[in-house]
Image 1 (cartoon, rainbow, N blue to C red):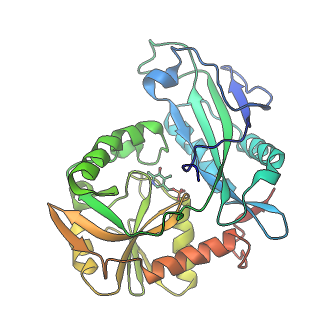
Image 2: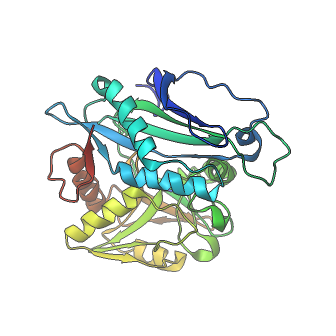
Length: 331
Ligand SMILES: *Cc1c(COP(=O)(O)O)cnc(C)c1O
């Protein structure tokens, strides 16, 4: 089994903005991209991307999950990075086109086709350190992925970091490479020093998110997660899981959660914690690490409600449950 995101479909959809207009979208080989070594993105990180999935249903049809949300978010990331704006319908058409071409390659559940739209600043100018790129390139890569939990569904060890930040607060809503680069050192340090899988950034004690996933505390019938503000990434999975939790009659609280409350609740039997994101949907957090001390969440294992919520979302994605919120679009 190859690593997540290491296999690509041989072609991608692409369009270039020349400073005044977008080129007619094309389908080109996906193994190379010609850029000037002085391209803005390579020096000043004018880059953003998306991650969404298409699923094969039993009747052979292929459905994309909440594509409108991801396209909207890429447009928003582009705006916050001062990249040229693009027509959201154009990106939807490019995504549909490339998916239609590789429809037969969309893996059956629990696999899926991971879709990676990417927008980069291409202007060949190293003098624009504080000026946006006038030109850009937008492309859509496809990567077939297998079962995320092939190696087993293991509860994660998560380090709470109340000193650092994932990224500067005004960059929180941008899905951009720069933010991942910023989170890399803290994550590597947490792995080396605490055998942690992830770092949960909690600036000033405010429980925010990890490097690439949102955080949810599930305590009995309550689901608690940080309310939307501009300091963190508004996950589509987060929104979907909260919607399903409300459907199940759970008490969903989008509000401030402090480290103190998190650790206090975690000690209660039956308490669960989870990370949400497109790749894995929902993964259990079994252990929290804070100031050199380890805190087991509930029984420290895989959360029952976590699995129930993940299954509910998977069932919709896989066509095994009614898509009553209209999240799936046919390709
Ligand atoms: C992509 C991402 C998420 C998860 O978003 P989904 O839309 O659920 O995949 C959460 N946090 C960060 C920082 C991300 O980059």
